[in-house]
Length: 218
Image (cartoon, rainbow, N blue to C red; front, top):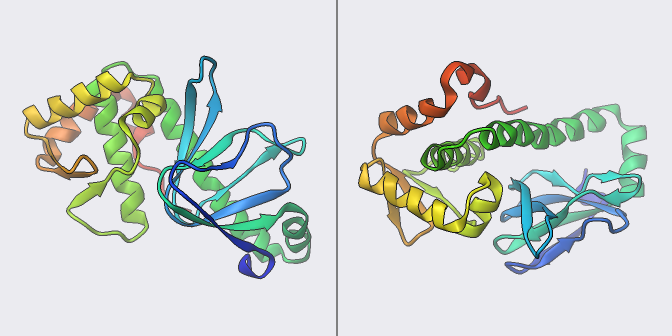
């Protein structure tokens, strides 16, 4: 139903999809690839709000303008959906309205998990939780594999977890040293000791364990 009112856009790795503050005349449904949503934090820094994956809808607006920027982390293919056409479909089809709301719940889940991650301090535990979140996301897409694909750069991981790139690299090395994970070609992570990963994550969960459990897909 989205495809009928949409055009297909293809973006190269690193290409801007839309800019924070620009007129929000379209929303986007990710077909393939990974997108980062971020805000400018001054001094050319970025504060990454979330990572978006296939089937996610991006491009939410406030008062007709985009609240974040979006950029392709990998080559990305998107449905580009005119806002006016989408609103007209939503008014005519309540079932379609519900389906879109379910897709938007992904951003709410991401925001909750992100807020929890940022509230913690130990770098290696933050990275462990991030890897677990990424694995849960890929499993929900039906991508069953022994390895976790990490398409984002160390800098992007740092901007998301509120760590420096150096701290991210040190945390990866610490997980390797503990034989919790192995890394192949920088992008492919294999969990060797799942209990060990959970023990590291439990160091930051404490009494809030129930809050940090992966949220159900809607």
